[in-house]
Image 1: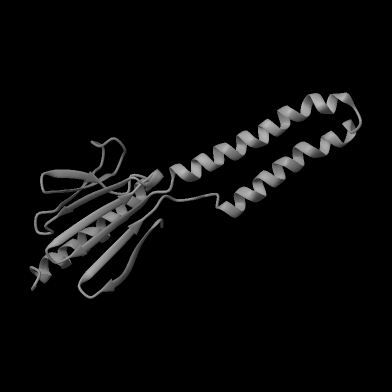
Image 2 (image 1 turned 90 degrees about the vertical axis):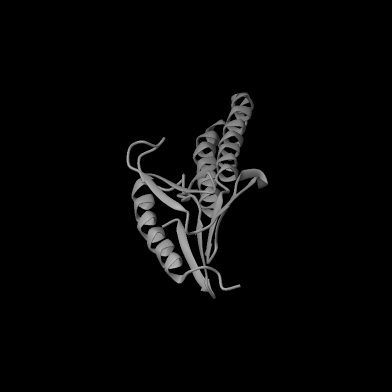
Length: 168
């Protein structure tokens, strides 16, 4: 699952969510190397021919375009959502691409967790509502993962509410 409950720190629970990566960096290197090899092998028959110089810029541009597209995909998916649950405060921090950061916080006794089965922009749309604002949670997760997360998060919020207000 592309989310993880971190070990509790006293009375604080943390949940981290991130997009699933089907191609890690190491896989990208292997893919680019394999693609370059597949493009390069047929060129061996053209060594010493002026046709090679006519094709070479296009083949290099193809490899460069694939590399650029994969790099762009990696940078766009640099998203981490950090949900912190503690008595008296629920905080969601979203670290987005290019260093963008968005914060939301609310009192856990007033936070409402909603899973819109069909009414959201995507099926199984998961939101947290509190302090007059509704925020999306795990936009990059699959439908099944959002449904599973809803159950786990509902239980964690119920435990937090039962624990009562912050003693400090």
